[in-house]
Image (cartoon, rainbow, N blue to C red):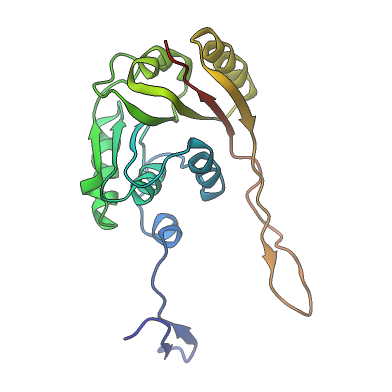
Length: 213
């Protein structure tokens, strides 16, 4: 049937055939094996990273592949994502998830520790979702182009302090720290109000720019 077509279910309820968005696929079809970064955070991370169609991007802490899929969607066929994940089980799950959405060709996932070695150079941005991002900064310094952005997602304030100190020590500049809160409203004209349940705190986002060494 054509997208947008109304159908009647066996229960008698009315439904519509809608083309799934990236958000629909991530939230309902991806197999989850880890905590995931939510769209409210992914959107801000991508926006501040400066990446575009054709960008070459490093990601570490691939996990389920939520952020990986969004990055691959954003950089297009000319770009590429290089994912580093130390858990071999997560690598296989992420690959299957990316195949589900038709983005596997834009991503190379390696079962490697980003804090030990990064194979790529001249990258346009790096995204870290690991518990010890400060240990990966020397490798990011080697892999990123001058002026490229490092984007780091972490869950606690303690990690913010240690990460920002390490960024400055490694020569990164323009360090910023964000927290996003998204509140959805119930779209009822007779009773417009916020929904009772919504996601509040998920984590903190740090961005920083690499300088020319």
